[in-house]
Image 1 (cartoon, one colour):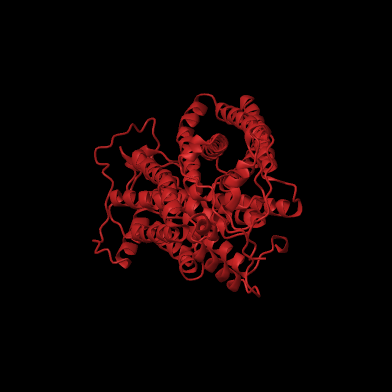
Image 2: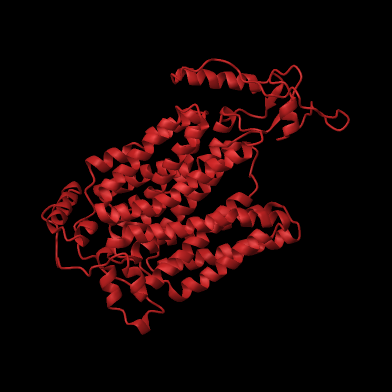
Length: 537
């Protein structure tokens, strides 16, 4: 880490971002909310995972949370359920998600394979009813729609009102509703809360990420993606759900665990000097740099040179400026490809193991390890730029998914299928790193939040298409991976031709750098700029 020139202030920024991701990882919390283990019907069962016992534990928890809840069991309405004993075996030794068994078995004989986590689906009994599939889908979809709206909405607000106040509002508002959701008795109100949480998740990934990048030196941006990352947060959330194996307590613990980000942001972090500079608030800009220098324990006054008027950039400039428009289109397709690849792969992948928590830990650990590995590559190979990162990762994704499609064509389901799928999953994460870093470094400060928000919006549109691809794979299994390889190949061509390398660029000078570029020379653009202000070394 010494190669990143990190001081005390930089570590504070990295810690703040990691705690912010602990909240942002709520995007995948529907995995836990909708979790339902397999079941079977047992005569005279002595299992600790009987349905009646699990509901009693749930009711006890509600009383502890001061619900004023009447302690009663709600039995399944199976009085009129008919089945033919000649072709239906109620008492089967095999655990499965058979709705005939669930609806026919008495509550005191219904046994789940495990009681690892008491989800909202179990709590509200979204199991084998006419609307259970709809409810579990809408919980995920409404939160996803919130993320889609939040990326654009909060991006605009942050460009206008500043990074710090909007970041504070996002975290405070989102964590409040995350904790509040654990006290709800009606799943309809839970849907509203999850939409608001999704709204704030979208703001976190766009606004707070841009804010943290603007507080770091150019060579430290990869550290923000590598050493404090989504995989770490996913491991922590999985462990919290393991320690508090009920969705209500888990929601509270996740909210409390993310709270340090609010306190650090309010008490210790200044407004982004980059945003202040571009808003021509030069007095506040100087004060912010001086505060950062003092917090970093740097002796003497920070060096502040060349305070000058910036080229005014408004949102419409993206469409009137040919270079900015081209950058946004290339970035948008990159984000679209990463999103459709990751969501389709997640939905189409088989479980690694029957153990629910082991599955989540394995996935999160591989993601975290891949991010850290990328950080060391960036640290010890300075010539490994943003273009290299994206192109190498995208090539690997295309190859891996092409191999997986070939294996599925020949109906191979062995260990090598899982290996190539896992390598492809890791490489998708690396394409996400390229997407975020290139978007932050390619857009001028005054519209950075809005531009990244638009890229994220395009990504969500890609995610919306993933269920369609999954449907096609149910008809012809290799089709999902054939489509992902094809889209990835088109993205590779597009980014190879038009994606600029932005590693090392001063975020204050993106527009000035663009203005110096000859239109005829921008095909193989490599942009390198030394920071104008370096008070933090």
